[in-house]
Length: 477
Image (cartoon, rainbow, N blue to C red):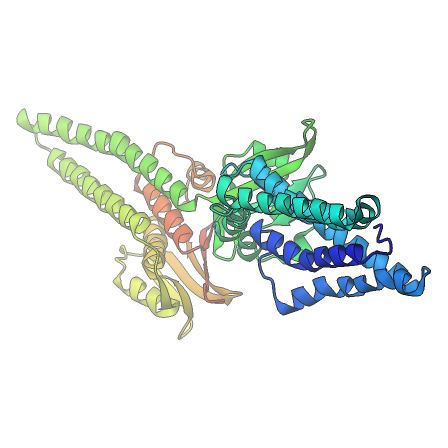
């Protein structure tokens, strides 16, 4: 600043200084950089500017003092506010498609023009005299007013503010149900949204700086080769579709990646259901119809020994397949609704209604009460499927136990039958569709989908005896 010794300089510069706090406050809200302007914010912005009047002590005392140096630092602070404000306005106007760069430049000209007028008013008085300086000052103010007017009326700067774009970006990231991460070139987590932190039950501060593989169990390279990734969330095990995008600079150098994980658990269930039920219709039903047709042809020839019984058995199998398919469709299609469920009472009721074959004993070991918050319909379907399948395989005994675990309960069904074919267990575990050779396979699919519906875990062990474990989480914990 060349404040000289004339009243014009202190007056003009002081007027300019008074506009800087309103200017930066306006810019922060206009661009959406910071919209929660409070009294505390205003005090924090104003305090460094409070020393600005000390800039003029050199006029009052005739020499530079510590006080005038403090005033100079305050003046530099105000110039910084001017520069930052202009930068934010121009950059934000350029960034969003609903605005033009010209709008940002014209709006920034207003405070810059005022600053130039205030700064050069002293030298103008000395070179042009007060009359000439007043004329230049008036001309400058006309330019200032013209810049403001052009912003308001010619370019309609305030008809559509850039804050919409910036705040909109934040809202999308904050309110989206997708898990979102930003990682650097070393795959360290630089940013994650609130949804990711909440659903994965991790602290934002703890996750920042950690490698992505430590947070979700997979690297960017791993995810690029996956169609879906299974993650343990606050709702249990869920399937997510990863979408990866590169982050580059203006020279196309890779800086990192953004990762979006979309929950596709329900979609995966629907696709599996369609594949499996389609296989049932094309394979099992076709086979049973062929059996009925061939036996009916024999009946037509008059040789009926045993063939009528085969037709009845095939018809029963068709009925059972249709019933199973309908039950599966209801389980997967029905909206999830959770509520209080007494698992112990539910297991006892299902066991009492189960039909046992001659020679097969069904024993129960369950507590008097086992309350959880879960999806009742899915739990009923899973429990019925596990007990029914065990009874159909067992030679002499089926044992059902219910034990508390954290958080929830574990239902174990053990039978002494020949066991479930390994290929069926592998198919269920992998979630792939293969020909279903008998009703047990369809029963296992019902079991798997029902367990997934109530966010539980399923394990099957064929070591000597068939052991099926259902982990029922308490979704209220």
